[in-house]
Picture 1 (spheres, rainbow, N blue to C red):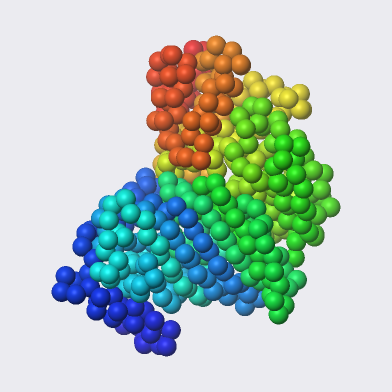
Picture 2: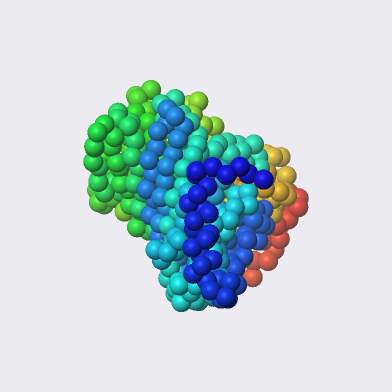
Amino acid sequence: MNPRTPAAAPLLLALALALLGSGCSGGVEGTPGATGLRDPYFPGLGNGGYDVTHYGLKLDVDPAAAHLRGTATITARATRRLSAFRLDLAGLHVESASVEGRPAAVNRAGRELTIRPGAAVEDRLREGRTFTTVVRYVGSPQTLTDADGQREGWLPTADGAVALGQPTGSMAWFPGNHHPSDKAAYDVEVTVPEPLTAVSNGELVSRRTVNGRTAYRWRTAEPMASYLATVAVGEFTTRRSRTPDGIRLFTAVDPESAAASEEVLARIPAVLTWAAEKFGPYPFTSAGAIVEREDDATYALETQNRPFFPGPPDTALLVHELAHQWFGDSVTPKSWRDMWLNEGFATYAEWLWAADHDGVPVGESFAKAYEDDANWAFPPADPPAASDLSDPPVYGRGAMVVHRVRLATDDDEAFFALVRGWTEKYRHGNASTDDFTAYVERRTGRDLTGLWDAWLRGGSRPPLEG
């Protein structure tokens, strides 16, 4: 039994008010939203009964004290008649919650919050109606360890912190429906002490300083999966510009990485132009990068609009993460089983860049991947466990699947038209492996069962013939 503390009082008050408002019925009529979305690898991740359309996050961050105070305003549409709904949140203490401006009861079980509104808002929780939830929370955000041992969530850095969300880390800094199938627009305001800068996704809308603390407000208008949301706090060297096509660029680089990053980051406009020719129009209005120090993390991540790099990236890594803006960020997997669509296409983009700029034919990159035993540990569309989602078959064998699709089309013109059609059809949406295979067969007019059985789902290395 937890001791009663002053911090618990708002929750007790909310519970009492919700019960008083519910009358004899015991609360809102309907059924609770499901716990988890039955993801193949993270069955408890996400929540059923509603779709989030917008997150308004207001964060006050003190990195030196490892302290965060947040207010999350979540706008969602009910997909069934709800009596309660759930949010994912790890570690942080919830001070209060309200639905449509009225106090709501909150129950916590591990990383799951159950929000139970009073009967006064019953009509707003009917199927198809939109409702707004406000959650106020505080505490020391956690660094989580995912299934393959990587650190995610809220990561302290040399002079601040960075939030990295793949696959489950976003729940460490804000409550939400943290599954890639539920994408939303975001407004993120982060207040930090001077001289720190706060960087997030999308476009910088405003910046204001009061009493030595600066609030940075960022807006992401296009839908974004929560694992792609980020906040980076530090003493960055920042630069703003535009590409010839009018895409807004914003880069934030740790001063220790600035000199070594300058040449590669200067290639962002050229890479975006090249990628647009291959994959279709760039799907967002802003782009850029966040570059920290090498010791601040162990991996790069395709955080939307602004990929994260732990230390100066090389060109191949820049191409990979920018290609993800099409594959993963705009066209987002329906479940984590579909992650090979992200990584296979991003790896194939590396092969295409090497062919166009380094004189390495795609066939040579394919042959190297084919001979690598690590790529044949399991089928890319069926990793054995969550700990295998970032293993070589998802990347290298995933790229081989893309190349075999290319060989199955009439010519390169038809193949790249197929790819551009894919990114257009599912732009700002979600797609599964089955969506992809059906789409390719429609576009090619061919039954490609043999290709999928051998290269995508097969358990062993197929012969190159056929």
